[in-house]
Image 1 (spheres, rainbow, N blue to C red):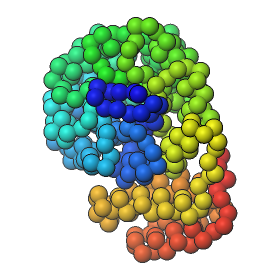
Image 2 (image 1 turned 90 degrees about the vertical axis):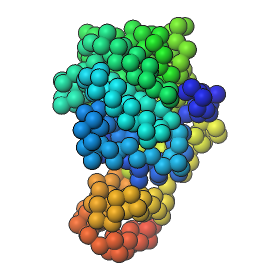
Image 3 (image 1 turned 120 degrees about the vertical axis):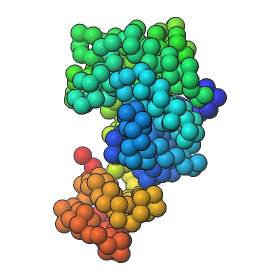
Length: 330
């Protein structure tokens, strides 16, 4: 049984990665319905919470059916991160996760996210202060290092465990790689095999099939996998991995009706969360992923992303569900 503090996650938990403009409550709902064991908010800037920015505050929304849920925060200043954690704790998350892995320039090059991989003492101090004031477990998501010449994840993992983090998720790339090239799980496995490490170690990077998830478990011994891009437009990946782990058999791919139903649920949850106008607008970015490989996708997508009428969108989805073909996945 894998545990984060008192949170029980099963034998090999499947985590939904925090993703900007993706892992919001509507998307988390369909992932939870398909078997995600632990989910996180989109990553939230500490300065946004302190300034009471509406976009940041809204990302704190947590619903009971999502639990266990983590709130992920990032920032470059220790005092700001501590205050942001205090604000986040008012939303009653099950855990607080610190992002030391975001590689994008506007985050990492300002000393936040993966930028902290260049200042391990500051990373340790920031984490220590957050653990000190948090009343829920504190976890960390990070990368192998800043670049190929500074893959310091073994040191980082030990030092963060020593000050009290409850779990560690590792993305198998350096900051310099961004999301390019294959993820390297070798060092993730080395962290897990380190006899000093006692906390759960979750691997992240390129897990987009049940076979890959099983390989990462067997080859590298990780306690679970965190799935990011592999879940976009593909929330059923969680149930597919679980089925394969238990039975050794692959589930049949989702039917067109199942794809449409997940998409429809996603849309309705978005409307429920933000109202009809914003819900319709924000779901547009997901249609191409749900129906990737569908013949004549351009004409279908055009209808879905231009219509402002819920009735018209539902009619288009009904038309798609009547198709007998299955998407050809890349």
